[in-house]
Image 1 (cartoon, rainbow, N blue to C red):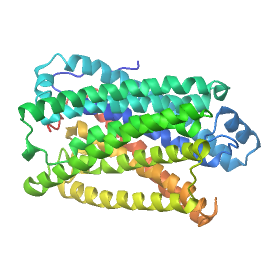
Image 2: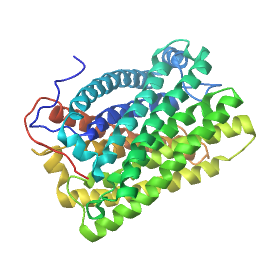
Image 3: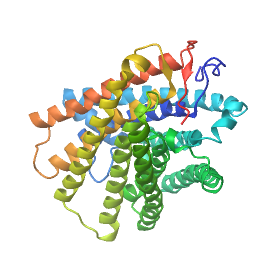
Image 4: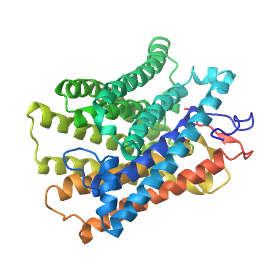
Length: 404
């Protein structure tokens, strides 16, 4: 069955469980990186089914093995994505009828609802990956799919804007936002959601052969990326101030790492936009410029990662909430940074180091950096399976739901 039983009263539901769906979708992207950068796809910005089958037929054994691993991984994670999505939708429906949901809508935690459009945007992105990898002839009709995909992302983004409209309409008019309990980066979640919508909307800018479609894609994606950046900057400042004054909490500690996936998503969106500007609007940027951007943003991610891991270690988070007995829906937030860093390393290596001539493709240095990205991927697969078994496996331990 695709959907486990609805969560019981002794295991309260939280919208943050939609991060389980997000994690599975993000891991699909890590497997797609094998195909993106190792399978030749001349004349196209991404590999498609025909490119993959041609590479498998004529490629060496290591490439064939990588293709098999990638396709099996994408297929398996598609199943996990659908399974967790159905589980979440069923539980969310029941949760909306409880007093806990009404309490959430009047607290700082109302923004946890943004995990829903975040996961839905990832589902659409994941669906496109499945189509590219497994559907023959998709590229012949892809121009018809781009407007449909943009409509889907706009609807998802609009849903997110409605959630934030209700939140800001309440707190900016009536007050009630508890700044003392804002001692995390939990409020950056909406920025992540809008960035995910933005990166999806930016895909036609990089892939469409129509200047009109690419231009509309550029404009729409720019709106959501700008909204994401504004929200992220404001809430990082507010959250950091609250943490400096009141200290962080163990349950919300994983939110300190949300900046890592946010940067990866915005980076990919910018690269997609830049490709569209280059192809259709005569805007040209060099490999050195791309290397500079990717390196700078990767260094920011590593700095944030160092801070977040320091706090997690001080709280003993892994031994308590991952391998230990306690449950927290926010544990799924730990999947996103590992996935995002793995993807970012692939882009930094291939679009930065290789494109600029600093590293030769498939050299020893190339393989070592790729190994780091793959190691992160493997750890995140283990984490997703561990958390799914712990939270969705029918156990009866109490779920610690971060209130803010």
